[in-house]
Length: 412
Image (tube, rainbow, N blue to C red):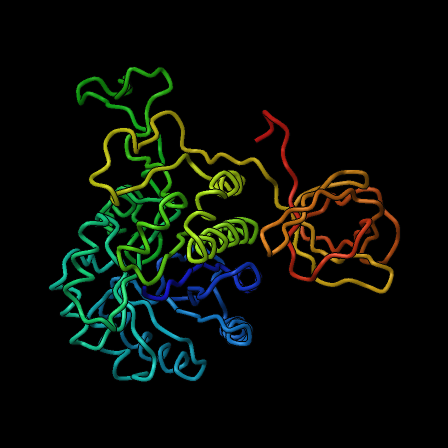
């Protein structure tokens, strides 16, 4: 059996640290340019250096995205950027453009190159082509089935790795190459500026009757004809591993630390349980389902893994996420009195119950007994986002642990 890597997205240094502490084997991040998530906070040079150091200290790899479809004007900047990355020592670069690939091979030959899903690699000949160019891994096109991936595994060199998305948002496009955003808004998805028009509500309008909107479906709220369900393969870990996939990749470089920690922790436990005992994995299935449902999501699909999706893979009545938990903060420090320092993300008060996410997969429901503000003065609530707050519980928790609150029905 091949080694199985759990690969997690990180939009910021805070999220990277959460991914590492909650069980990632590797994280992928973007710098301030040349990645496909320009609206994500992304990493400054200083944060990238700190993040790579933190991850490596914990035995976790870091991959940096540079997967735009480059134009002439991008190339000199990319060359300079790769020279900077060469000194930082990430474990791999994620690239889709052959020109960018060539620059990386020239400027930082010691860094492994992974071929992005944006390169649309759908057959074993393409994988072998990239292997001959010097790539160590190809990210599978999302349109591949497990049957096709097994055949690719059998027809490429043993040392070449396959990475595949197993959880997160799906695009209405071919492996992320989409023209809708550019067409509607002038913002190019292939340069990282996607406005997500696949999530918008659509009607039909007849040319000679402007302003008269006809619903595409027989639903009086309209329809979201391009709006895919989210991918979720938590119930199919055995099939992914047996197909020979080396890296199980989570989508979401715009997600919060809460989302990343919850997804990472759940897939970490599912993978480890299966590798220890298939019976243990099957016995814990309800736990995995429950924990994944605590993340924001759009309802789930298995994508293309078991054949081409049908109409049931789309969501026709809404584009919003299902959200059952609110992010409160990450424990930054604990003082001698047992108060826990956080930078508050959403309002909460003394007397409320908060759920503590322990990295080992367990949860603790604890009552907030007391709070102090940044001046160490007692307060009853924390109303200001990112306010420094010190919290007293009945027990001492760990630095880096996340706090969340379950929302009441109808409030999400």
